[in-house]
Length: 409
Image (cartoon, rainbow, N blue to C red; front, side, top):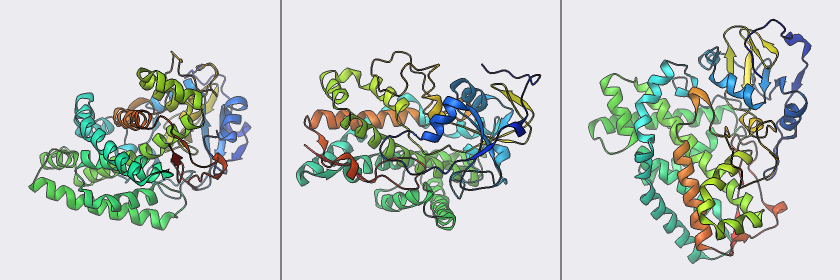
């Protein structure tokens, strides 16, 4: 239970600082450090591999919801502070919506919200289904074994978000490279900052072109918002970069995690073959179950003393919230470490909570549904082409996923 009075709060000095190495994990293994914190120390002090100082780690469902929605915890205040974190760099540009607090955050999101309504996204479905069919046609012609990361789970999300953004097909290889470098802790700060700068320069030029020659795409909407004075050029570029990079990379990895989960739980896969109408509910359960990232994302700063779950967090202290552990909280989810497609109560937090709830959640669901339904319908004998112990997983990744996913049929 979360309260906001500090009458009986504990002092932070009573809590040891635990170093969180964030080791690379195989498959869908849940981070044992996170599991132990949820079980034994749900509000803990931690130090991550990069940055300075320490931070609070909040792991319980209700506490995570509280921290991520209460305005006394600020994203904006993170700017300029080398807080402890997983990556050697910050992913968003300084002007990005990810660093903003309301009302600035509300203003920035409003500029692109129209492109992410259910009706707008459903207009993408025919094109996405056609691209998926073409990709699978090519994979089938090539024959097994085939790498799904190369044939489907990588190119489809990149094509869909690029189509929405207005990025030409010829530029997709550059986008894929920039995104891979930016969303990894393994390339180092210099390479990541260079990729971010090059990607930002690309969108500066693109928005200038779209202002002169607008089209039916998100980049043209952003260019129009700049022309009207609703956004600065820097804000529009930051929004474009964040959406393009995160949408392509996150869906690529999480959809491949879903495929891997089904291929390693064949009874669940067989059930979806028998009951295709169950797929949307199954996707929600896979979203809850799959540990889709390593460690935690962007933190927050307490703007005043606030009690969270009986622990006093003082003004100026850093707080990280774990959506992954919230999704495994046994007080909310029965048998949380099991995949259960019959789970009726599934208020998972895989797309976040509060003002920073993921704007692209419906798009991610749409793409995941297309990927899984296409594979299930076309390949009734789909299976892994290698033993699970031989499948390579991305190293030093921020968003977890396989490096390759070989299949046969």
